[in-house]
Image 1 (cartoon, one colour):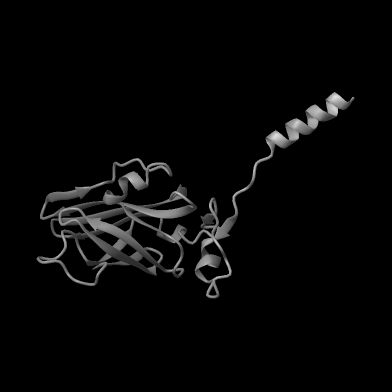
Image 2 (tube, rainbow, N blue to C red; image 1 turned 90 degrees about the vertical axis):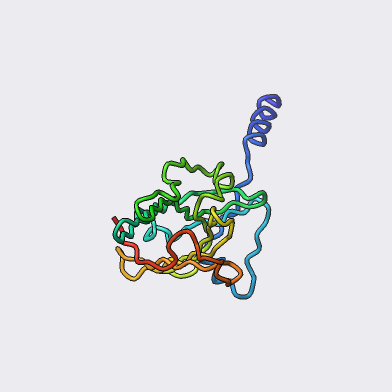
Length: 184
């Protein structure tokens, strides 16, 4: 009988796994007193599904120029210490009929987001229900930018790009900096 109890206890102990502490991105963003502490293995999760209004395909067209952006949520991306849900944007930009950038075909998983960061639009966390701040790289000029997406309606969003240091690069960016996107 002792052997059976020992085996059951051993199986129970070996099958126990610690759970990741799940922290809401909204709660973390609104924690003005810094009461929420991130530990190794913490998971900043989009519990309230605040990324949902941004997810989908968005387009801007003007003559022979086109910006097509596909936003998707990638869950549980590991950054070396913690996990976080990300809003990822893949995009295609055509200027005067010439394709300048196209990352729409990139297959994104939680394991390869960091490997493709130069080619993607990305951001985690929570700002406001209708507003998201993301980062992206102007590959032609190797300049990191902040991208601000503001939903004006459920099917319309303002796209605004600014250099992270606030300066405008010589000759501007190699993609549109202020346009209105329409959800497809």
